Every structure is written in structure tokens, then in C-alpha cells.
Image 1 (cartoon, rainbow, N blue to C red):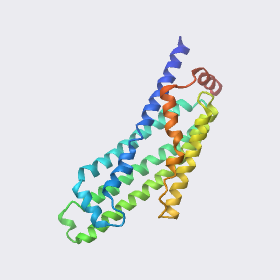
Image 2 (image 1 turned 30 degrees about the vertical axis):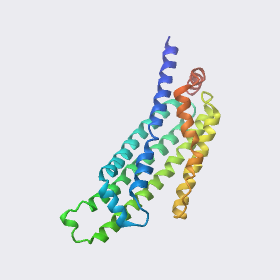
Image 3 (image 1 turned 45 degrees about the vertical axis):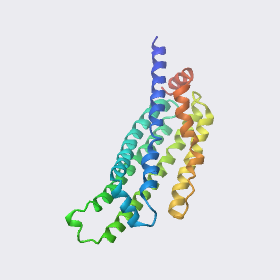
Image 4 (image 1 turned 135 degrees about the vertical axis):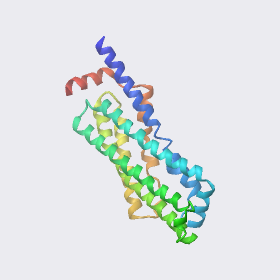
Length: 237
């Protein structure tokens, strides 16, 4: 009876991790959709005008990014519980890399709030001309993009220990672990390419991040092999 309840508990953990992981995908709203609608690369005046005309959308994008960052914390913790029996050192590395991205990501939203403040029309900003304010807005938005590229390094790095753990787990398909490790290199290469070659616009992660979709879908639909998970847990005890 105890073993049966333990099995149900770990399946619940697997499905909670899956649901939380899938909740990260709407991050595309604040990270991709909103900037594509409001930011005009190289045109400070047009960008400022679009933000002022759609301030609610801009603010919604910021809130979306903050909420997704919070959800990411719970994803890390759920996967920690699920994968801990495989290798305690690697699961600790996964948690460190996974959580390291969160403060970088959240603090980066300060630059977006700064852009809004510059467009607020406050009296203390009258020392700047309209053109100067618009240029500063675009500067802060470019800083925000650079901050996301830094956070993306850790989004990639945490996938390598996670992929290793999944590959070695025996209670999840090894192919999912391989795909996750490939995803690691996609994010990391894309981040450093953005710093070294600013005009590099290829989104490598679109081609390498399949493991991040397939893992939560597997956990949600199939769950884990409880018998193998319990063997792992007893081995690591």
C-alpha cells in the first residue's frame, strides 16, 4: 500500500512538472510577440510612438515575463524532486543553472519599466528633448534584449544536466535526454552568436528545443516508469 501511494505521488509530481513546463511556452507573448508589434529596430521615434499607442500591451508583456520567470522556479523544483534519485550532483547542477536565469530575467524587466518612465511625460524629464527621450527608450529596450541573451545562456546550460539525468534515469526515454542536451547547445550558441555578431538573426533554438516540448508532453501523457523510479530511489538512498 505504501509503495502504491508513493508511486501515485511521483506520477503526480511528473504531471505537475509537465503542466508547469508547458506554462512556460506562453513566454513567447512577452519575449517575441510584444516586441515584434512595438519595437521598430533602429527607429527610436517609431518605437516610442508604438509603445505610447499600445501602453497596455507593453505592460502586459512585462507582467507576462515576470510571471513566467516565477513559474520557471517551480518547474526547476518539480524536476528536482523527479530526477533527484538519478544523480544528486547533476541534479544540483541543474537547479543552480535553472535558478540562475531567473534573477537576470526579472531584473532585465527594469529596463522596460525605464522605457515607460521615459515616455511618461513627467516634469523632471523636460530637460530632455523628444528625440533624446526616444533614443533613450530604444537604448533601454536594446539593453533588455542583451539581458535576455545573458539569461538565455543559463536557459541552455540547465538543459545539459537535465538531459543527462533523463538519459541515465531508466524511468524516462533516453532519447528525450539526448534532445535536451542538444537544446542546451542551441541556446548557448545563439546567445554568444548574438554578442559576437549582432546582426545574426537565426533563431537556432527553434531547431534544437524539441526536447523541451516532448519531455513535458511525455510526462503529462505517459508519466514515469514507477518501478524504475523506485529502484533508482532505493539505489540512491
